[in-house]
Amino acid sequence: MRRLPLSSLQAFEAAARTGSFRAAGEELGISPSAISHAIRKLEDLMGATLFAVNKGYMDDIEVKQVLPFEHGLHAFLKDKHAALLQKMEGGKALDKDKEAEDELTSAIEAFKKSFA
View 1: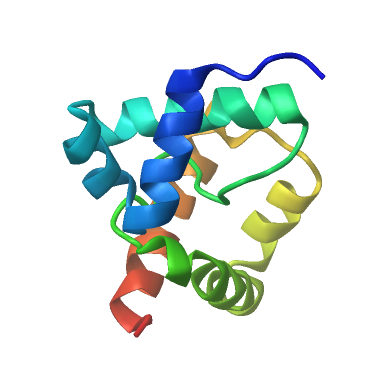
View 2: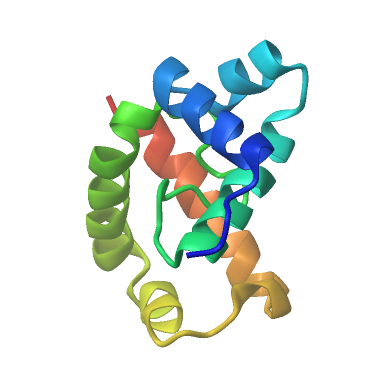
């Protein structure tokens, strides 16, 4: 196994311990986005998903709430945005489909209002 970058391990440890990319970034003196990039690099090197956080949509969700949030969001999308979910599950890259990406952003914001 290839050696893992210490900075990425520190970012992962801080995010896991604090339960927040924002809090981890504040602790390490970097942005939440930098925490996300460091963890993504670590995930790529390890070939494993460590946090299910995507495009900053869940930066304000506590780490321990990410899995329940994703489960609820999936059910919400299945019920209210089935065509969008089908695109996502079909592997379509939404970053090349502005309309679909806007719909996803709007759907996530709507779901966040109901998520407790």
